[in-house]
Amino acid sequence: DTGVSQDPRHKITKRGQNVTFRCDPISEHNRLYWYRQTLGQGPEFLTYFQNEAQLEKSRLLSDRFSAERPKGSFSTLEIQRTEQGDSAMYLCASSSQPLFYTFGSGTRLTVV
Amino acid sequence: AQSVSQHNHHVILSEAASLELGCNYSYGGTVNLFWYVQYPGQHLQLLLKYFSGDPLVKGIKGFEAEFIKSKFSFNLRKPSVQWSDTAEYFCAVNAPRDDKIIFGKGTRLHILP
Image 1 (cartoon, rainbow over the protein chains, first blue to last red):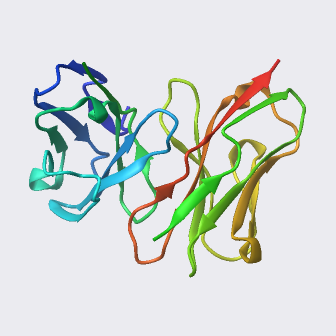
Image 2 (image 1 turned 90 degrees about the vertical axis):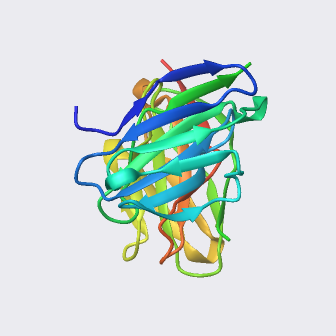
């Protein structure tokens, strides 16, 4: 399968712990997006990379969140000092041209 | 800033019924519009999109949507639904020169066999 891969699929963590998620985009895609989806809501934009450059960050992305995309390939999203409100599905999407997203299956985070 | 409103949170229909899911967007200028679908246990997939041209857009699996600029609407339709259409449907909008897509809250569609 050459789609967008996200790891892990599920993560349960205690409040206050740090977590890191990984997204591997389709190899020729230079754009990479992170979204968050909570219960009863649609995906909410978090941040966006073109190659290794982080071009936009949502106000939803507090100081506890950081995303990187070293070398313009895979990306990581780290959440420090997790809170119960961070429980959500974290979605990654990639594209080779604007607006033609391919989504991954997501990482479901549960903070207990 | 763009926003999207989906009127129905949960719709239940019987097979062969006709479907129309409402979507309104809020943005004063030219927009690009999308419908995405998420089948149970699967990732989000593009159903159809409108960038310009014919306001009646046909997508996969017999779905279509009509862009009505005067009503800021982009409703999704299917003349006869199937049990396999059970899924969550998201309307989404993009403003040109903006690389991100803004999603509505979604409509959960349940088709009774």
